[in-house]
Structures are given as C-alpha cells and as structure tokens.
Length: 388
Image (cartoon, rainbow, N blue to C red; front, side, top):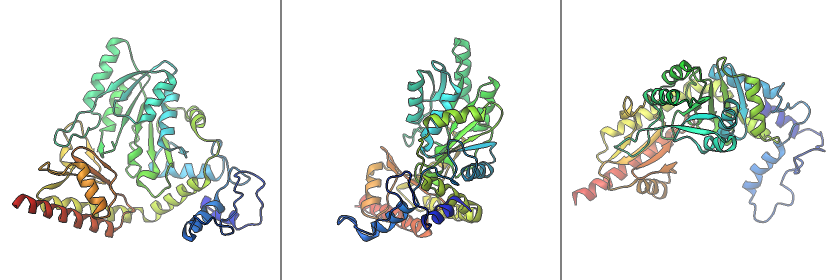
C-alpha cells in the first residue's frame, strides 16, 4: 500500500487524532465561513482530511525505515542512483545540505556565479570563501549559458597555483533557460583533482541524472507530476558518505514534513512507471511540432537548440521554450503580456529579449495547439504592422 492509500485509509477510519496538526483532520463542510465557496471547501476538505504528522505506521522522514524509506528507494531506482533522500523543503535544502556537508566552516567553494540563492546562503552560513565559475552570455538573446569544461579546468588550475583549492565544486545543469553542461566532462576534471562535484539539477528532474556527479539535486515538482516543494537529493560514488550527508539534510529539513507532499512522490512515480514512456513520447512529438513553427514564423522565433556546441552549452532542453522577436519590436515582456492577456497562456518569465515558457509531460495537446495558434497569430499581426 502506497503512502497516498494509507493516508486515505486513515482519513476514513475511526482512529481519533490526539496529536498534531491542530486541525485534527476535521473537514470544512460544517460551518464553512461565508468567504469560502463550496468548490474551495471541497478541495480543502480533502487536504485537511489527509494531513498528518509522524504517527505509528507512517514512518519518520528524519529516520526512515518504513514507507518513506520505500519512497526514497523508489526514487533511487528510477534515477539509477546509489542513494536518494527526499526533501519537502525544495532543492534549496539539497543545495544547503550538500555544501554544508562537503565544505567545512571557513572553507573554499568553487561555484557557478549564476547559482541559486540557496548556494549563496550556504556560503554565508558557513562563512566560506567563494571562487567563481563564469558563464558566457548568449549574444543573440542576452541569456546566460552554462558552465563549460574549459572554465572549470581554468579555475581549478588557477586555484591550485594560488594555493586556494576548494573542497567542492557546484554547477547548475540544466539552467533556468534549459542549457545543459557537459556534466561527465566536468566531473572528470573535478575528480582529477580528487574533489566532489555537486550538480544543482533542480530544473532537470525529468531528465536522466548523470551518475558522474557525486550529488545531484532535483526538484520533482518543477517538471514532474509532484506537488510544489518536493525534491530529491541523489548520491553516487564513494566520495559522499550518505549517512553524513543525511545528518546535514536533517539540519535543514523541517521536523514537521507534509505527508501530502510525500504522498505526491508516490503518485508521481506511479505515473512515471506506468505511463512515463508514453508521456515522454507525446511531449517530444508536441515539442517537435512546436519548434517546426520556426520554418513558418517570420519575426517570432523559438530559440535555444541552435546554441548547442557554443557558449559552453553541451545540450538544450526543448521543454524550456524561449520565444523572441528577431526584429526587436516586441520585448520579452511584450510577448509575455500578449500571451497572458490576449491568449490566456501564462508564461514563466520575461527577460529583455525573451519570454520563457516551461513545458512538461503533463501538458495537454490542447495546450500546445493553443500556443501554436497564438504564436502564428502574433507573428501574423506583427507582419501586418511591418507591411503598413
């Protein structure tokens, strides 16, 4: 029985909760406040009825030996990792715990300058000396690329020459914009100096995890069917003592983890194991069709794949859809606002030149069709302006 099923069974049982949380699994059907409509009460009722704390038969995230341990083993099998740890505090926890474990107080960390704020927070908390890896800027779009092998080799050579060798290296792959680094090539360089490599792969949970990295942090919720905040820390190789890493994870992990979040991990991997191959193929077909619009669009352009092999970019995730206007007439914010207000499509982010949308295996064909129609209509409208 999975965690979701156990929670459902408990919710319908006569076991009275003289324990946390304070809502006592009561439903909201009786005495609904006037400002809560019936539909809202329905989904809140389900959430309240299944929200528990650590009680008998439900394991303990900080010392898992039962059903939670089974979820972590399931995650490790899926990614082919030696070990996996669950995080209900997002990938921020994974980054904080990994750096905290590998780099002693006052130590040195070689880090991607474009790293997530959680890595900078780790530097601050541990009072580390940060050495920076620099990303190149993609001139055509203004987006930053990812860390290349040459940059890692250069900075480690300099650090050794200056007598400031780091205790660990952390990079981001894929980046927010979908650029992937050559993790194996970078790992070979880092391991050549007998150092561990951390990969902040928060945006790549849907991709294969590169086992050459010693620690990879993935946000299950960003691109897979899991609830927000759910992430995993994947461990490979002998440079990481899993037990020691777990101690640091427990430092940053809440002691009141959401069982609803953890149950969504079970449901997520149910979907992946049952329908993952089909959903991935459907996503690929939809993305191929979308990017084929570049042959029809005159002004708008879906950018990204063409930069593979330059700017240190090893590969590109097509699910990160960056749209730009080649004429420069529409800014990234213009594209964003038009998609949202006119075509009722909510993008992820706007930059100076580009508008980012994120697609994943749970997106519908209808959603992709709406996006294609919107882009063609926007492009046609812009051509009309150009011809007047």
